[in-house]
Length: 259
Length: 293
Image 1 (cartoon, each protein chain N blue to C red):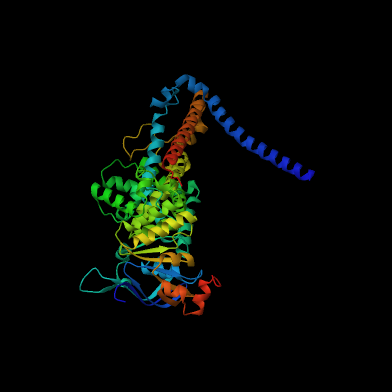
Image 2 (cartoon, each protein chain N blue to C red; image 1 turned 60 degrees about the horizontal axis):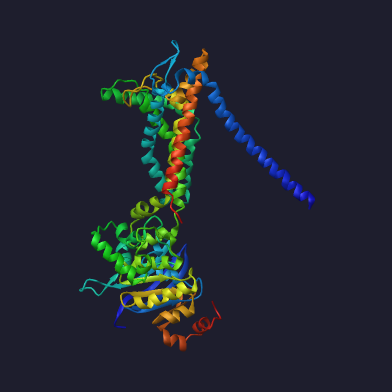
């Protein structure tokens, strides 16, 4: 595992004293797509939310263990996220949520720049224009909205809104992008477009996607982690696990016997 | 089956009748105001709004000092109430949305609105007026104690729960999705409040402010007790003055002449119109700033 960008060591998380995930050890590969799959309630979303320290926003949430992100500083190889300012963590690890959530009070243009606006980072007009065009192009939305940039994004379809949200996350130039069931609220055609987009995006960013859809994990991911009742059951290359699962639970999940 | 249909009809008719009664009373109320103030309207007309004389002996009546007094106290109280309302809104709408502290704070805020206005007025008269007088002596102002400023302070205290209660509800309605989106982009809690929650809930916040303003415009007892009841346009914020409501309350019992009485009712009509106008304006602003989903 030479090319890890993000490592998890003995990660456990709970809230209201209810353990959600326990003793997870995982390494995520740079510029690869890793899918975290498992039945509902297995803790996959919690695991994802630990990575950008969103889990701790929930009242009475607890996290233990280490999360290490490849450092931008050449002297240190990895930085420990739980002792890093969460604001810095979230700028390097972006997130897209289950339901599209563009800011309704902002225009499409402002939505792409929301990360900069929220953090009070001033941009020159030309810089801002470039960021907007580049990232709307990355998510293949530019041609559809370029004449309506100054309009509020609420007239867009669900799929378009979700791509706008991906652009918003990418505009901060994160190293890792977390996707929390990004297509669960979308129709099949929009879903397929987002899946194509995810595969395309791995050139620029490392992607970790949570899904309870086995087919989706198979279509988009290079690596897959299977979670069951808070434990990491199996992790490996998607092709290997899909054709030859070592664990009985994994096989049951892949064949639809548990969901 | 027939009985059921009949029930439905009866219920519908009851609804129509009761609704019509309320509407009729509203219309009748407005007509009475106009009818009763006719003699004053025909005598003073629009000069009523610009004249500063209020002289029952010579039967000369003008409402300008009271209109000024009403608007001054209302908007000044709104201004004074704003920072406190904002603080309560943020504390109850974001920091403590449930649990013990939230309940205690909410209860205490709502308790203020249940204090009878005469009690607040009495407290104002015996505590706030001397305090303001002390302040005026210290700074070399005329030591009235009573006046526009004192009335506005008391009004501010009274309207805070109204504005805060609605504004905090609006803050609580901000979808978790949006807050999380902002956090995930590296926003701090204050940035989330300022850039996401307040813009999203601004129509609710404005609605709260409007309700508070309506209350301030019409509040009678408290204001009458501490405003000083002067018939002149206030020279500054510490001068005594009068509001429309306080003049009516003060002078209704001693209004002997027909024209005097009619002019007081004309004043009531003016207050009614001001309130209606501000409400309409508020509705227009709310429509302008509403977020479409």
